Image (cartoon, rainbow, N blue to C red; front, side):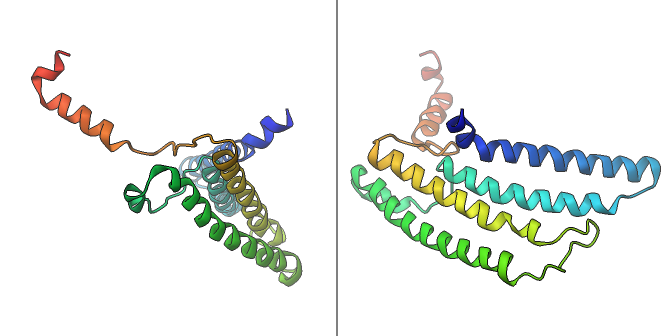
Length: 183
C-alpha cells in the first residue's frame, strides 16, 4: 500500500493541483462574467497551485525518465554504454539538486522573514516556497530510483514521449506506397 502511494505521489499531487486550479479559475471566470465580481485570492492561489504543479510535475518526469536530454551523440556509441553515460550525467543533476535543496531549505527556514506574507491570502510565504526543498528532494529520490532500476535491475525505462523515428519512417513509406497498403 505504502509503495503504491509512494510510486504515485507526484501523479496524485499533480492531478489534485491541476483539478484545483482549473476549478478555481473556472469559478473566477463565471464570477467575473456572470456576477461582475472578482475574487482576488483565487488568482493568487491558482498561481501558487500552478507553481507547485510544475515542480511536482518535474519530479514526476524524473520518475518516468521523461526529462529532456541531448541524446544525438548516443547514436555513435555502443548501446551497452549509454545507460552508464546517462547515469554519470545524472550525478551532476543530483549534485545540483542537493545544492539546491540545501540552499532552498536554508532560505525557507533560516533567511525568510516570518512577516513576508502573500498579498491576498495572508499566509506566510515560507508555506509557498516550501515546495522547493520538497520537490527537489523527491526529484533526487526519483533520479536515484530510475538509475537503480536501469543499472542494478537491468530494466529499461523508456521515455513515454520518445518518438521512434524508424517506426514513423516505416509507416510513412507504407502509407506512401500503394503496393504496401495491401500487405
